[in-house]
Length: 376
Image (cartoon, rainbow, N blue to C red; front, top):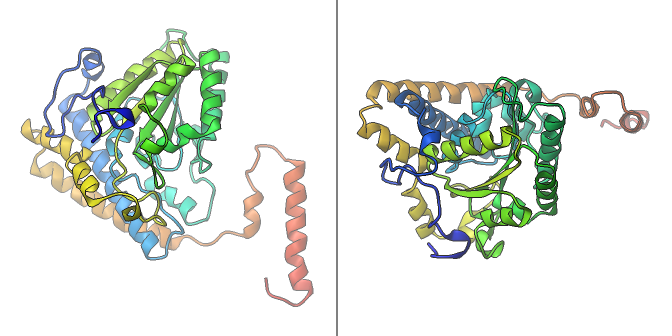
């Protein structure tokens, strides 16, 4: 790895080394004090389950059951660690790879696949889960997240000192999104208005095929300073550190003092999507280097060293992921293609003249085939 620039790991907050050793941190240890063995086992469980689901979805895409799949392979610690730091008042704006965060927010994982089978734009109630629909337009949701956070502030849901009332927003995006204008604009508004939003950058080192070294000459967290946003870099493969840093950032945001930028330095072990070939732009040596830093293996080693991860727990999770795989396959194959006209439903909460006009035009268009004796 480089000793400087965007790949430096000198300033990363690390609390669990790649060999599974727990090390103290002077600034963030107190934010991890509540992580007992049972909670860490739950994190290990969640990371294991989401990886198994991820692999199942990849297989389904290869079998032609999904049009596309976006893996989170290798990024489980960043997502599960930060997801466990959220509370019920917080609201999440994901991009399209946050399957682990979705799990922590109670989204049934197979339902995510409705999007990638081309059946729905979103398959869960964002308000019920406090987890917005996936956003495929790179960086666009950072503006939505900032606006939502500003609205929470204006509604008196921030900085009251009442933990049952105060909340914040977390916006997840990748390193490539930091090069988008929308993200820059979102940070301007967030900083100026002290919006209670945590920008969580999962720096997996590749914007599709473009390495982070072609996107920035300095660590991405340094961009926050230009907007006056406090920033921190964390080892994105360390679930303990990701939890502690996100908990700190959320407490700060909920208190009403403004936004935070977190750069979780991790690695995309899989392809950008199932239509991508990562062998064209990275080496096996790189993949081997990061395989030794696998986030699940790291926590597994730590828990095992404490005697807190026995055969019973492993067997239970193995049975659970096997059942999840079966249910995922059967659920996906049971879905029927909805009526084409359903794409006009739920675009807006209230009736909308433009959508009504587009629906009417489409219905006329479909009838024109029948009028001509042609099967649409």
